[in-house]
Every structure is written in structure tokens, then in C-alpha cells.
Length: 197
Ligand SMILES: [Zn+2]
Image (cartoon, rainbow, N blue to C red; front, side):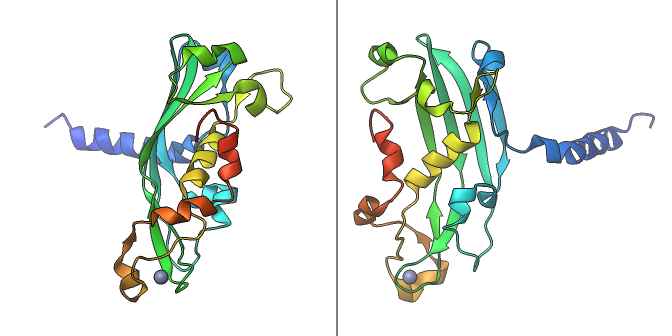
């Protein structure tokens, strides 16, 4: 009984716990460092860690962590930020004022263009942003505002006036948001920065 795999794995576990503070979602990804090799970040994010999102979350229901799996990569010589989000946030129903869950799980993909002319390298259906417009911080390094971009996408997907389909049954319900609400998203302006909504 010299081998003790349990203690080994629990040691590993405590290492993970110890470093959990530093494994928070990075605010930025250095493009100087990662644009060529690619970059991946997998982890959990708290809805409340996004400032603009927090402003619209209900405080009447506990928020649970969302899973994020993000990838920065080059395809066709164009940089892409792709991520899969799994989770939901709790907002306030605009009819009965009770908490309502809004599903955010989806695959997101944005092409990051170094110059306008790269538009012809991406599909018509592909969302894109110009790096010059999103890298606004003065820094010797090119820093992609990773967290802000993810938050932008979340806000675009989040209805601003969510309503239960049936408020009487509200609390159990995991909100499917009626299509008509989509037009009420004040963050829709974010979409106009893109080639496509
Ligand atoms: Zn309701």
C-alpha cells in the first residue's frame, strides 16, 4: 500500500483551490503574446463579475456561475474569438416583478479584423469587429478586452424587458423569452459595431 492515489489527487485539488483567485477570467488577452499561437481560457464566471450585466440582475434570486470556454485563434489569416457559454442569469420579470431565469447558453464567434480589407476574408454570416475600434486602451502591448467583449455578447443576448410567459406559474419557470422582446434591448447599439446583428 505504498501508492496513495487519493492523497495525490487531493493534493492536486488543493492546488487548484489555492490558485482559484488567480484563475479568474482575464480582463485582457495580450495579442502580442497570443495572436499567433492562439489562446484558450476555460473556467467559471460569476454573472456579478460583469459590471454592466450586474446592473440588470435581480438580487431576489441567487445567481449561479456560468461555464465559459473561450478560444482565440486564426483562421484564414483572420483572428477569431470564439466562446461557448453555458448558464443562465436571473433578471426581474417586467410584469410580476418576480425573478425570471434567462438562458444564455450559446456559441459565440467574432472575427477580429486587423484592417477593413479583411472583411472579404470572412463569411457573410460572420460577426466581426475592427480591432482598432475595440482596443482603445493606451498600452505598449496590444490588449484584447476579452472580458468586455464577452460581456457585450451577453448583454446583446439578454432581454431588457423579460416577462414570464405565464406569471402565475412564474417561479418555477425557466424563461423562454418571447421574440417580441428582442427589439427592446438598449444594448442593441453594440450590435451596430458589428458587420451583422
Ligand atoms: Zn412574471
